Length: 248
Image 1: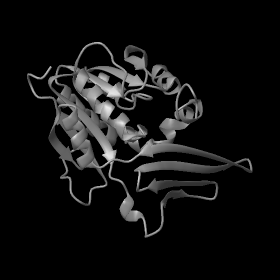
Image 2: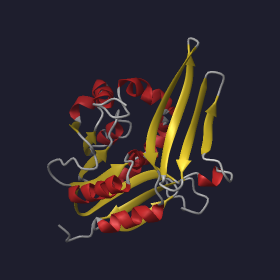
Image 3: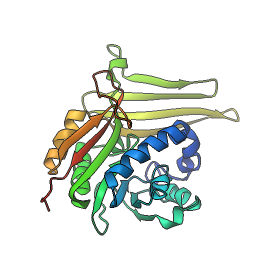
């Protein structure tokens, strides 16, 4: 792990956009930005884990004033290098606890990033931090996967998700602690390289309780950004919690 940038240091940042290519497809970004711009209205938006600006940049082009929080200077440097990136304010820090000035109409945390907080206490703190930044009536939005435990046969704790002659990738799960990790093995010039990134998976009902502890209430939950119904077969969810009007 990079001491300064956590698990998203220069090595990860350099290839992040390419490794997450499907999330940069215009259709994916367009529906995400439409959803968030509608919630923001004429107000400000705060992105927790702004990264390389995948969503922040097109959202800002929709005339939404966007600010971001991110621990990784290497990721933010990629944002800054893109057109319009220098116009977006970014605060370097842990998004579970870092505060910025002012309040926001919408705070959002996308693409499984809540799982980068590897303890329940940190995830609860994140909800409280989001709530503290919201104006009354504002919304906190999370996009996150449903834990893939149904893929685990009895006695197995590993789920592979990429296999090729030069690259292997797999997730590990500890169902007792909800700890998981994504692990990558790659052969480069005949030499093997390995890296591992830890996460903590979390269930929708657990997130709802975290929201309640932070003074938020569930407003809506969808299978995706275009309003598909969330069901027991959903692989992910987009959830929106609202700060009640009149709450400081």
